Length: 384
Image (cartoon, rainbow, N blue to C red; front, side, top):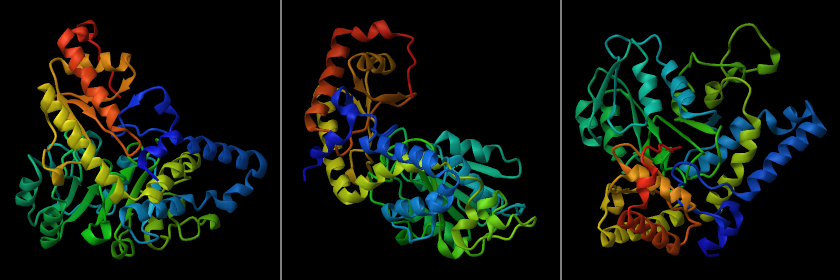
């Protein structure tokens, strides 16, 4: 089956040139059916639905994510978003040892992650320029290294192997944010020996909002005790016991009642990723992002993403004059992409996009810049 044969499963592709999968992946039509299945269960089964699958979804859906990221069964759990997942990881190390209170990450880290650690007064946060500088900054005072696999502004793949090796040499733990890689760049968290990995489903997994996930290396899951917990983390949650007794393994990293409708919706996108395989998706992505770079070169636009395919994720950042206004004009033409301040227009094709769509998008950008039609959008700030 050709990758473009999957186009019919994504309704939005009928009406738009949808190139914003790095921000909100296109919705599979089956996601609507899954949500309707949730409402049917609620309507017909009522409270019995908890025992008929709802309660276990934080783990069973986590296992599906685990298969995509190379995690063993039972080591990945679902949460609402990455901020919650990272806060749970951080809670395992409280009270923080004042002699090991350093957190090191790169300048390009996603703001939500940066804000979490900046807000903790007991932590010494060190921000460095790039992945190489992270390795140099890690020392025996380092507690956590919350890094990004693929940077959100540029789509650059980080050398996480070197960071993990250095962190483990000094007894620090790495939290790998794979939000911009899961589903588009092959990832094997077990082979990397990473301590924790987090991510979500809004982007390349095409699983929609409300589906963050957290991987915990199994040997750590057996000994760490998070202090940010809820009743799902109890060994016997329906015993309603007054004192906490941790569940075994990754289940102790759960919190309260799961976001069941989001979990239903997310599995439609995961099914397709599993069916196609991330390696095949990656091969196509490298080819299409190279096509985008070649088209930008021909048009005379600066490319902000890495030219080396080994360092390039699924997104190509294009710098044009007044790119914010150009982005707004593209939206008027039903070419859906986005931009980030100080970076440029971000274009993120996925496996269901055609090469002709990429040619069309760059040709339209060139026409907008050449004719100056973007000028009517000065002051526009549409982003999300």
